[in-house]
Image 1: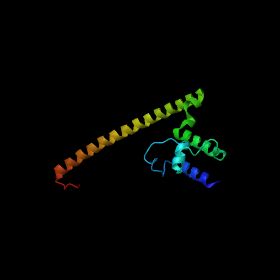
Image 2: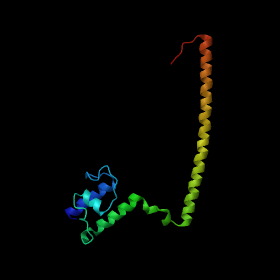
Image 3: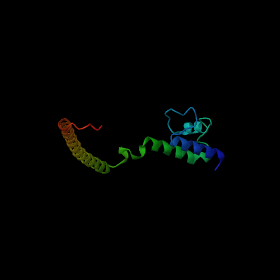
Image 4: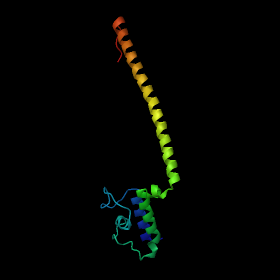
Length: 136
């Protein structure tokens, strides 16, 4: 592997991990394409040209990285209807399960609030009756 190709590969990895070192790309939104990889590698934006056969694999990696960055690998249009219905049903089941758990926890929290209130009132009564020192 040539030094140039290693430089491009390292630049691509930095872009994939969202850690560019080039000031033009830091703190900005960017797409992962041939131009941004070239800029990150410190070269001219048009340096990864289609006529260079040595960079074919790099170009395909760049395309794949952008697809993964966008999350297009699992788009709804790429899945069959049956799988979509299954995922929808799973999501609905998970939602109803979470809703039930939430309601149970809400009842528990409410009962603890009521119990806490009772205990505070009981403590106030003890302090009034027996002249106990407060402990805070």
